Image (tube, rainbow, N blue to C red; front, side, top):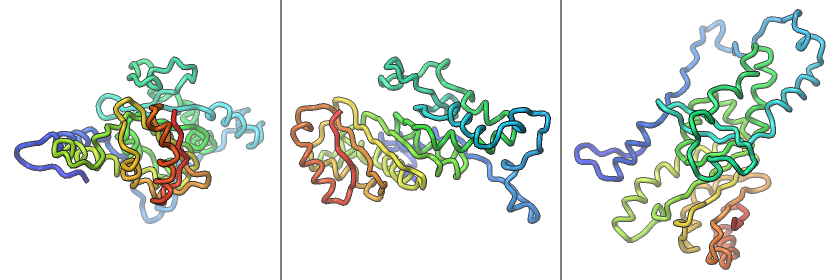
Length: 274
């Protein structure tokens, strides 16, 4: 939990409190009686003999249909009004406002169309809902959005996510510094960054992770980058994960030193300049 002082608030306290106050409500806990505590009603359905789709097509063919409808997307996770989470399906045409660093319009935020298929009936829900998480890339343009999403979906769905991209213009002053002014900003943002890394490393099904440090103001010395990425040292993926740095001459020149410094600290990632 972020530290919040009583009385006079500093800028550090304001950011910490804002982070806590903007958190969306968590999912209500399911209550089970002794007789039904092992039963998950989400997976129970009544046969529908009148449905040609569910009776004539084999489970294998239905699964192929669900995969075509729900897979292969890049989904931007954003925060809506009233502390609610939403998403924007990226058109992947270069015309996406979120990809270009802007904010999505209200019409772009999908209020539930991705879940339309799963909401058709419980049988289709059971057959298709996990595919929505396993077959798509979830993109976060703010570290807060990633930690905010976690308590709003069932834990088994969170663990089903396989591909995550975290793209954000990280303020360089979040790194340790002897400057007392910058130290305040560092303390204010560090807690959220640590919580974000903890959420990423806890994803049991994660197979692909990309961290893109964008923006012209991220221009920290090579030796500070491993310090910043230290909370991700526990992220051990089979194929490793990717770190994308801003295309600045300094990083292009020092990319080998950056890669070597990360490996010395046990941080296994492929460094690229984009």
